[in-house]
Image (cartoon, rainbow, N blue to C red; front, side, top):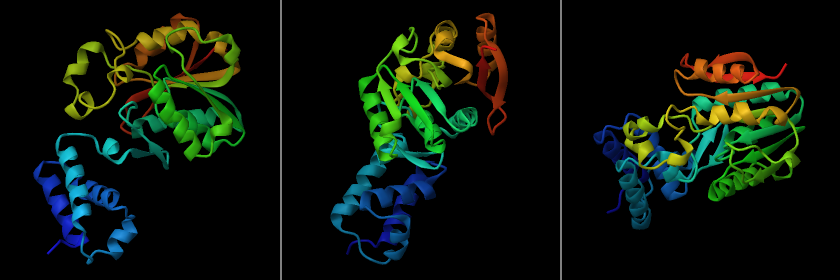
Length: 283
C-alpha cells in the first residue's frame, strides 16, 4: 500500500535530518509540495490521502538531489526575495537575505521615481524588486551572460515589470555605452570573493552556483575598482551609487571610491551587524 501524504512528508523529513540538514522540516515540506504540485494548505488538507507511485518517485528524485548538496533553490527553480518569488537557475546566484539590504537602500534612494541601473544583475532580484516598490521608477539591468539575462527577463514578465525594465548584455568592468544615459540610482551585487578563497566555499556553493558571479579577482575588489573608474558619467546629478560587499571589505571599497573622487556617504550593516553596503555619490 502506498504512503499517505503525511507519511511521505515525515519520511522525507527523516531522510533530510539523517543527512544533517538543519532545516529538514521546512525543506521537506517545500520538496513534497513542489514534487506533488500542492500548496502548503493543500498538503495539510490531503494529509491522509494516498500518494501515487509517480509522485513518490518525483519526491525521491528531489530528495536525492538535495542529499547531493544541490541547493534547495535550484531544485525548486525559485526563491523568495523581498517577499516576491524569483526564478533562479544555475546561471544565476541564489538571492540571499543579506542582499535585501541593498534593495531596501535602492528603494529609499529612488524615492518617488527615477532611473535605476543594476550591474551584474543576475536573476534581476535587486533591480526588479526595487522598481516593483516604486511605481514611477524604471530600470536598466546589465549582465554579460546571455542565459542569466534571459532569467532576469522572465522574472520581469512574471512580476509585471517588462514595460519598465530594459536588459543589456554588457561587461560591467568596462565603460557602458553613453546611449544608456544617466541614472538616479546605481546598484550592484558584483562578484567579490577573492579568487584564492573559491576552493574553500561550501560544496553547495562551489559545486552549483556560477563561479563567474562569485570570483572578484585576486583580492575580491576588481569590480569595485572598475566601477569607481567608469561610473561617474553614468550617475545623475544628486544620484547615488550603492554596492554590496563581502564581510571585511567595506572599508577597502570605500577607500577605492574615495581615492577616485567619489564621496562615500555611508556604510550600511546587515541584520548580522556586518558592513554590507557601501553608498556613495559625486557631491
